[in-house]
Image 1 (tube, rainbow, N blue to C red):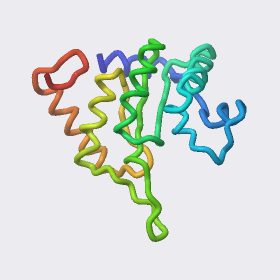
Image 2 (image 1 turned 90 degrees about the vertical axis):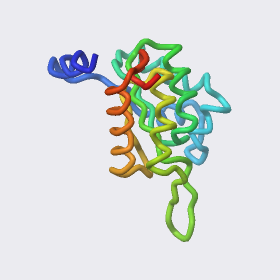
Image 3 (image 1 turned 120 degrees about the horizontal axis):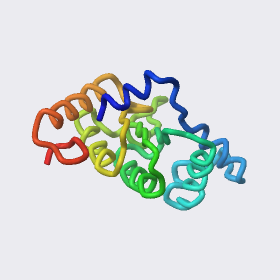
Image 4 (image 1 turned 90 degrees about the horizontal axis):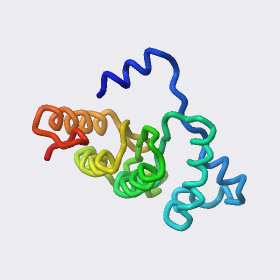
Length: 160
């Protein structure tokens, strides 16, 4: 399966979606409001933006940052139920807190793969990290994926 993706990449550039926040703002949502919170308070508006991108011809729908890995599985599940497009999921390391002049992200590199595993089960095809993640987070994801691929796996490539 991974080889099919690489073969597709060799054929040329793949088209991903664009700016979510820009379109939400064009629909009247203030830049002072949390766009991530709209996934909870107005998921139909968010899905509508994704549908517009699908109609525009995207091959991959991306979701990143914002709500952290714990809530990203629900968003992934909603997207996978409304589209057959490939899903790129790159959660932040949780909702940051501003402490003494710095943003602190609550999710650890050890916990991050446990949360993102739920995203894969929900339908994510591409996994990574966004704000607050470091190379150690990606190493943890890599270990989880390698361990899953070397053991007995289910249809999502994860350990049974």
